[in-house]
Length: 301
Image 1 (cartoon, rainbow, N blue to C red):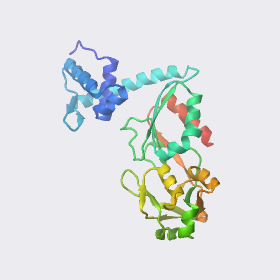
Image 2: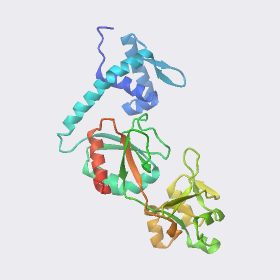
Image 3: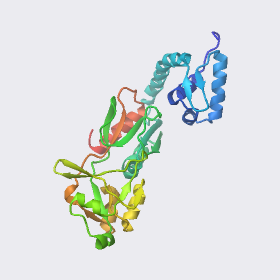
Image 4: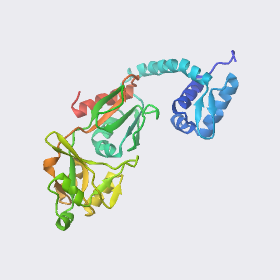
């Protein structure tokens, strides 16, 4: 074993498996098949003469030797990444891969005004977006950053406003209002059919209204529960119920008269989405350029 020297590719392979504790996720990151990655890892361990991973049919775990090995190679791999990235700063057009997890609503609202112009400005940066409404552990999942509604985040995370502050509006079709009338105060919504929103966790969204600085949550009910803003908007236009959506998502329908806003006195322009990332993690060149871009476009530079 003392004569065997591991290649950088093998070290990166092991580090990816150790990070995700999943051959499938590590293989996706390395752009190979899980079977090929598993086969290569077995050969790596055989040549080392040490078992680094403990495999079962359900999970992958590090052995004690694997944990020690990971502790030693992580700083070196990080230094190599930084060294390559320093060269990236000398390019007129930075390049690299940037992986971001964001809710589908954030992607829909920010794709055209923020994301597409960023790619046009930096054509050599590859941006991977995972549209997911679930709460994602971005570190464990291997993302550079995430997007979330609200700035309350885990410790050691840095938050930057992502897009502009927004209002969330209660809207319904003219036909719906002609049939059922319109609520006068938020609590009246309990007596109207509403289009509910369900999160991946199963929790249903409580609609938030404001009277001055006092927030009021209303647990609306209805005969339709969805997890997709486009379908919620479609159902509202069809007269199925009252919907609660961000202003940019309903602006066109309001202008055309397909929807009517209600309870306007109880909604306010509040904080929108936030880009968050680990404060103690080295930021790649693509990530630094994306943060600067978001700050510039959000007016928070």
